[in-house]
Length: 261
Image (cartoon, rainbow, N blue to C red; front, side):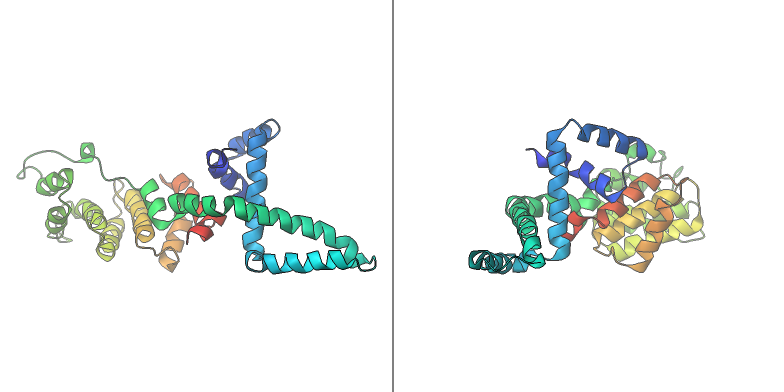
């Protein structure tokens, strides 16, 4: 069974983040696709194991119940209910054994901070730069440094711009990217926030999204400011990054995210 092929769709379906049309198609496919149904069952069992915390005590409990079965005590209500619980936990144990290594590896590749950042972040494309000579375009030296992936040179250049200079918001936006590439997360956050405060249509929403990704890269997804901004974007139907923010929100709250952490 190719679990990885279906896992992300199963995740979205279970968390309720799948768009209505895709959800209807998913449910229709469940009726005919055995592997998809099995993956959904495995996901739910695995989630139950994690949430109920049965892994640590599973072996001792099962051994205890096995002894109880051997002793053959008188039939009681509790004994009648014992076998279904045994079967349930045995199934859960099987899921842990089968998915244990796979789950850790898969979740790390797809749900760690590094994976979430890498899957969403994109460096500015050269086509978005306004070309021209340094005299015609005061940001041109910084753009050249970005194109050449000279992140420190770009950072140093864009840091020189003061708030009263023309195209300050744009300079701050690109400063955020240069600092982010260097792992200078505090500087990147300050730069994107400065760009946002200028409220320029061309850069404001892009700066908001990249500010979120900076928090992810820095491992600060529990920060109150991050959560507030994430909620604002994902609930704003008119935001350019609403769908991406909704997907990020779903992954941050997912079962696989808890394994990756």
